[in-house]
Amino acid sequence: MYWLLIIFLLIPQIASAQSAWVHWKRFAERNKDSGLYLITTPWLTEAAFDTRKECINRMLEFYKEYKVYDRPGSYHVTPDTPKLTDNKMVFYTTWPASSVKIFSECWPSNIKPSD
Image 1 (cartoon, rainbow, N blue to C red):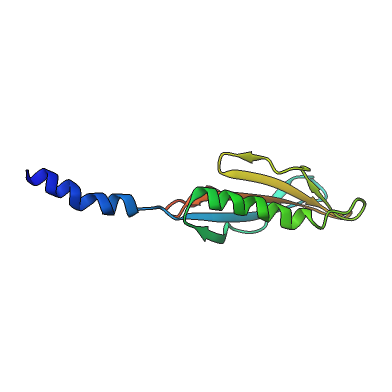
Image 2 (cartoon, rainbow, N blue to C red):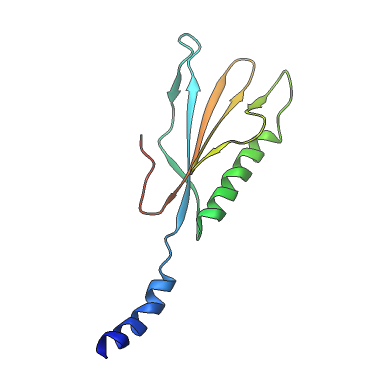
């Protein structure tokens, strides 16, 4: 009998326990001599959300914010459409003299992306 009371007391707490999701970003610049991308920033928090879906939607908006300035011959974002792999997305911004690799990831608030 008491276990039933305990279950009814815990149900609201279990149902309301949601993990926040954080959108992280990081940048790497292409070395002109080696052609390798070198990390130029630590992981930076971009925004926090109540759900994974909201966070993923923000990742797509983040990509679009860069893509809107795409101009052939001066500034280009690749790939042409965002490609999500689970909680992660990588895209590139390229100018005639440089290129930046942008990492965008969503993780529960208690997890930080790995280096």
